[in-house]
Amino acid sequence: MERKQWYMEYKIHKNRPGLLGDIASLLGMLEVNIMTINGVEDRTRGMLLQTDDDEKIELLGKMLRKVDNITLNALRTPKLVDILAVRHGRYIERDSDDKKTFRFTRDELGLLVDFLGEVFKREGNQVVGLRGMPRVGKTESIIAGSVCSNKRWTFVSSTLLRQTVRSQLSEEEMNDNNIFIIDGIVSTIRSNEKHHALLQEIMVMPATKVIEHPDIFIKESKYDYGTFDCIIELRNTPDEEINYDKFTSYNEF
View 1 (cartoon, rainbow, N blue to C red):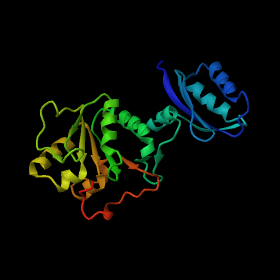
View 2: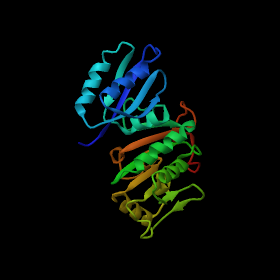
View 3: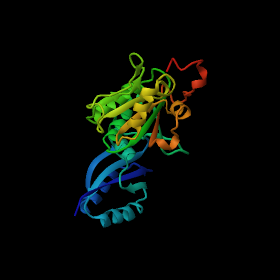
View 4: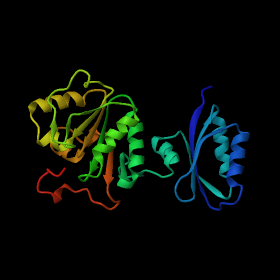
């Protein structure tokens, strides 16, 4: 039978000596392997577990819910955010109303790059939006995430070094395995018809596209919010407002 992974998370009410040992012993008796373990922020512990018997996980959940010193928060098939929480010891902030929006600050660039790397490893057509003010590290994070996923990146439009507006790509660049980086402002406001034709061809490819400034991209094109599989917000500080209205033009972006 195939060995499956599970994410277990519990909150500690009284961190008495031997608590973790007791839980580890329980897992050992059930022959459930601990793959990774980490403290996840304040008095919460997360584990990635592995077993070939789903009934053992069900039994584990019933037993842990009877332990007075802890509250079992989660026992489920691991999501990407669970894996990264255990790996980094901190949660990725998500919008409470819009679950496909993930928030990062500049001091979490390592976590963001790891998140992007895992997203980029997925096959098929996916569109990622990346919001952020100028010089916060948007493009650099995308490139680093591409390196982590062992994939090549291709600039379709960009202002990283100088304004880039591609009207054609080589056969090697038009590869479904590449990460296509698109500046939403350059591609919709500062481009030409040849670039628009190329952009539409790329958007239907079964490949990963990362679009910086997705709100402008949506406003100035035929695409809408439903086009995006996830939206990432990158800020210098948690309370920084991502606001295009402060600028008389989009040149600073």
